[in-house]
Image 1 (cartoon, rainbow, N blue to C red):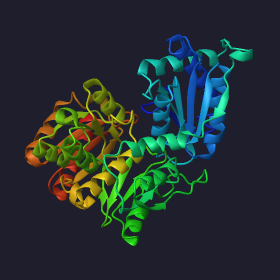
Image 2 (image 1 turned 135 degrees about the vertical axis):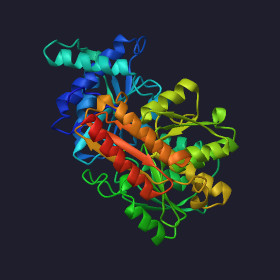
Image 3 (image 1 turned 120 degrees about the vertical axis):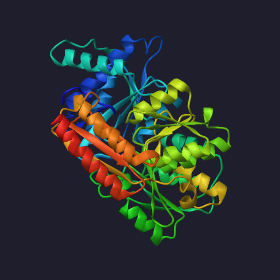
Image 4 (image 1 turned 180 degrees about the vertical axis):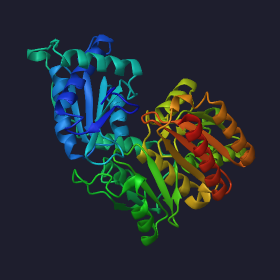
Length: 452
């Protein structure tokens, strides 16, 4: 698997790449590294462990719990809950560590392990590197220092986690939304229980689809990566809007009453205006990535909201928010972070706040989302090129300059080397889709010529 930790924990095919032995070993290593860092000093350590409904999560959870308890960490097993719920409970319960078993929007055979530090925040990169190094050291033969007797960790189920998390979600809403009819697509995932419960407690009439997880059907033709069923259900039930989550419910996409998709950029725009009205949008600033639609940037400029853009990845959005104290950020894919109420992207919270805005204003989601116009966006992957020379090729720079001149202020070009594959991503936005396709095609040819 190369380096174990990626941008979102450790992921791979369960029982092939991500084995029980690896899960156990990483958990023991995490406990030892955090102990060395002083996290457990002066008290008996506690960890919160949760998972999504994948079948492989059952044995991986057992391995993680065994590893932590064998290292002297008491474990609160919260069962099937969303990733942001595990992060929240880690902070709310004063736990020293949180562990989530999920591969998010990936297909069912995959799974993953994500660690949270005290407070429910993502582990620092240096701690992840240290955990990986310690795991490798002991995997090759160095014995662990193991507690015995009363020193071993104790394990108990924490069933109260469900209600505690739902109460938190409903408690931070600015208003109720009694009377709204909302369709929820839970992707047969981790939010299949908590999301419908939270929306009902907030006053909505709820219709659910994709809310029958059986361990095998997570993300299968449903959820935020497959909106077709949600669009049809919203129209069939005459709903005011629809909300779609992914497998671990850290993201949210929406559908308006006509069945039209409302993406993460539009959701950010709606929430930014709502939060500014409540004086909750600190510095009148929203954080997004460079892949955000140009229409979002133009809308924020028109509304007098400052936009800070980061590299692609919600971790970079979160870093910028924490460093500068901003309150709202996210990605086009639907990862939305409301930092006053969550330490990570929370799809259920995002959907609730979006519904609250519809109820508060009496306007349709379609009308609210029209604050921005999504410009046509074309993405072309150019494989088998030297991606390291994207920023240094004079020929490629000349091609980009010519494309930008042609597009003017209503278009945009972005060339981005893939972080995992030998390819370059060419993204072009323009007011006209045919122009976007034409420019993207020419730039793709320029990439092949200059870097091939």
